[in-house]
Length: 196
Image (cartoon, rainbow, N blue to C red; front, side):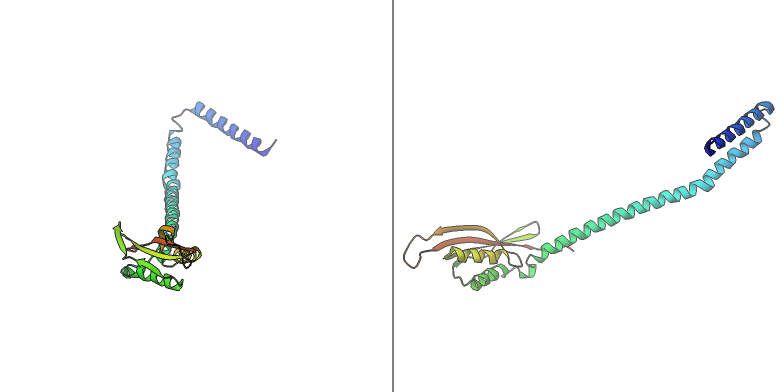
């Protein structure tokens, strides 16, 4: 016989002995023993089992809270890094006055181009951001214009070409063949407040 069945048979015999003893002698005779056994079970539950169980539940809640806090901290760090990365690509508030105008003029000079017209910087404030735009007109060959656009779009702090209008020059003579009349608007965004 397997050990499990042997133990089960022994337990069944003990239960039969207990039931027959209670039937023979009556429940009154074992009342005090039943009461003491019930009290011991109740006391062991409240004094031995319940305190570690409550502590275990409290520790599980603290562990879950710590995991959630760690997840939130990681998410905060990622968002903060993204925000700092965005700020690093934008001009500072202290550069607001002439930064866009000077940067566009400098990029035109580095490209060896000459402007027909540069208007003044136009600003619009919205939700703590300053949107600046600068209209520029040039006469140049398309390859020169393309190189200049690449220089502007890859500049740091960031400038963006928001509008472009290219047309062939109206008066065609031998010196203007291949040149285009170009008007474009260069824009940037300056945050008034940088969050940490």
